[in-house]
Length: 409
Image 1: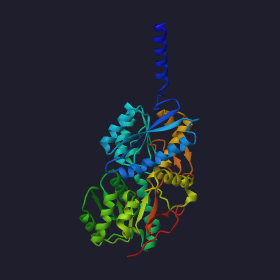
Image 2: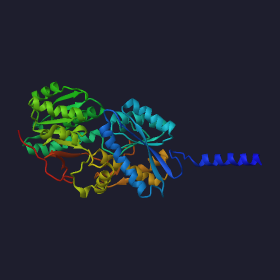
Image 3: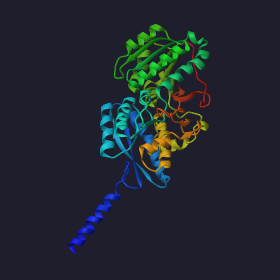
């Protein structure tokens, strides 16, 4: 009798163990696990956390509405990637220890580049929802998809805005416009700057100086004086938070007064930037992901997102990074709903067939993934401007709520 009881107990434990795990990153047959790799501490944590919040809201909304694929719930397994080294370690942990087969991330290009390398070697699907370096998708990896626009799209927007708007506002021919570029020297800043130089040359725009610097610097006076010496009509800046504030403050101290200043996302998007520099923010343009003073007819679902954000976090979004990751995660969930399981090959195959027309998502972006490199071809940055302490969408016209304002110097 004891032998029978023991045998029954062993059989019960075997069955229980077999039912408690699901291949492909699920803790049980009704739960699907997805890794979420972001800088949640350290120097990049402000926008890293803001980005993660968008993913979190999309998942909570999906779970509340019944989950995906007939009722399966999504569970996020977080990884804190403070830098590229940590990104590699956390990606390895998520894939090899937690059994995760699909990861979303990651805000920072260097983090994305490192983590997606690990995912590719392991055959796990990496969805980039916010990092912009072109090199992430230029490698044409088998297991990477990106929903947001890359840096080269930012540079294209810079140049098209100068060509279509700035020339008219300043009353100058395109070939007479002088452009200076100041950029932090990581993959983020360097990629945007290099592409802006290349596209400017193609259009006949004169880039009079390019000034790289470390984002951790506490003195940009030499950068500013070199720019001032060239007397540019336009200054394109690519900055994180602290260096964006430093550039604004030291520019005023040293008397740099450029007719058109165009930021490139990063620090120039944040409400913290405007609060720190005050009146110096007004008039600055910023090429970035969609923000919130925008044509709502072209961005259906944004109102729902803002309501969810305020209810959960008790404040307004701090930048458009959360919205961008929310939209990207909804694409991930749509594809997962169709596939029904976390199988990297099946998800990639379904994603390459998934399309959405522009003007149909909370960011206004459409979705169509490049068949070779996984880049969303229908994503685009917009031009915003700080006006009376608010970041207003001003271009292109389809998405704008106000005219761009340029004061001739």
